[in-house]
Image (cartoon, rainbow, N blue to C red; front, side, top):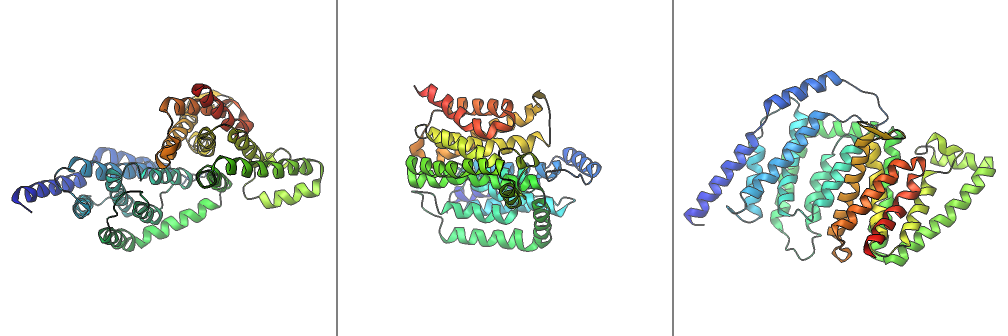
Length: 386
């Protein structure tokens, strides 16, 4: 390495260390006071700490900015690891050890995202969804899933042994010294599972099996057949359940951990969801998969944000904050799907139209949103393509 390269590397390490040291004390102090004043809140959803949101965001931005700004000063995974380490070293100790560790974890994630933004976008979407669902982003999932995903990047030469060393350093530096944090997160995870709303959202996420597993591997026909089978099973069962109380009692015992009280007598959300997805599957590729993805993530995000921060009521109790969250989920999930499956390229205007219609339908259709969101979004996108 010549003198110029050494000098640039030294400068990049100084930038990394300085960025790690950067903090906004006034914001952190104010958020700490907000945290102490909130105390322990009982809710149908896990409490989200605004201070933790800030720490996560700052960690991600630090890792992203340093690797992006110093990209021309050094090349290769070895220097990326070194610069990431300097950001972590520069991070000041915070009052709560848990939050400091969480920020360092997102420093690592931000660094990898700067190198592979397209490939790690699904992990970012998973991390945000975990945060909204559980009130935490669980470090073992985030740290181990992100580097593992790099092995799956088509056409990209893997970092090889350097990546293995990277993962080892992460485990030693972040996970092992922070056993208290892992225990704390495990306890939070157990308590979150006691909430019906959380279990229901996890159950809903299983719907990604249709657009993200069955559709990529089996194609349009497999998607349509699987949803048709589900519809032919569930809707006759709904009829039997309505007129046969013993069968209704048995099904409610099975669905008790996730079912809403009104589903005891009415049609279940699962039956509406499967029929709505089947109707959407009748549209051409990739409108069918995209509309199902919008339903599967858009509706949960609307609930997770709308119930925690119900700002700007606009129709039938729906909040503007929940609707904006639904729109963000539809757009981001569709964007990530297109990135992971380039053969399904779709103009952004078409995706935006489908997302807007899905958001509108989620707001106005009340208890029937599971049935109408996906076919309405698919219909809107299909009209634009005519």
